[in-house]
Image (tube, rainbow, N blue to C red; front, side, top):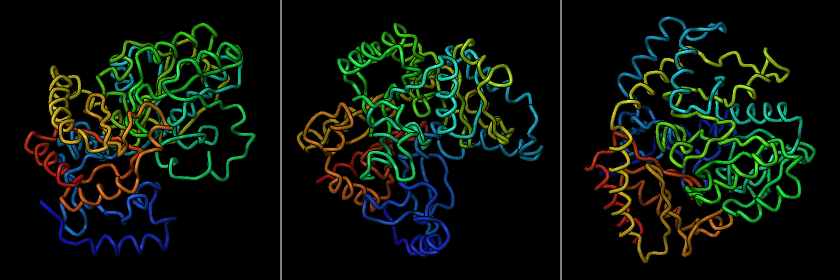
Length: 426
């Protein structure tokens, strides 16, 4: 497998630059940090994407973790197409919204009541607003390198594409918008305990990725996760798990099921919409009762819960609930990781992984927080990315992102990828 040329993609990018800032609708897609220009994709199926130059790539980005069943899964696509033929949006309730909400709650019982929105950013922004309304407090605590979307008050020491911006936040965000956002180091139990001991009665919410995915995959210690639950319970703050990526990825019940920690509120997205714009926020009934029309916290959206995304989400969650799905995916992922660990050993690479997510950090030392990730060799990663691309493999195009294994990544595909990684890092 390999690629021929990317002339059509280059021409498409030049045209896009004339009408779209940076030529892309989300910054990391521009591929500037890896020293190349974007692919323009025309179709995808299973574990593969095909660009407009007819180059076929094994995909490990999977739309940033969305396609756990693989691209364009037949039953999911049919459910969405059937929904479109009935009407793509009404701005009026449908039964499908209730059905999907029931399925989400069945998988994640801590979401006693939930509401659908269109993106992970909307979900986290709304959850924080509800938490502030519920507690009557202002302060939000987050962790370095955890990315919770691009709402103004969340763009502080965020990971993901923001990691390559020199400022701590983003231009266009007034200081007044972030003055109530406190940032602590991830995996630092002492800093967490100290802050809450001194300020806990002022904190509305603590939000975190229970497994960090937006500074690359960084797994929390068991004690760190337990401490987030302990300090918030003690001081009456709302614990929010941002499971936009980890929800339905690390288990049917997400990271909270995997680690046995029950948050007060949860956000999910990506997988929940089956490839269509959908996310949800939810939590304890008494907290969610604050939301309009029942309470004083306002949130709305014309396309929230639209029937197309609901249909795709319902079919996706139906398939994920089949016996043995996660066990099989975990087993295949673990075998891949075991082989990859041997390949990268002694090569100045740290391999972080959890379930079917992994990141190769080009770093000599273990990566446990955002400061560790930033010490990684981005030039070396960029070279690795281009080497993999030339072998027909599209890994997530940033040192600060995770890679995702789907049900469609067969053993044959994974073996080819392992061989390509070995060649690409030499």
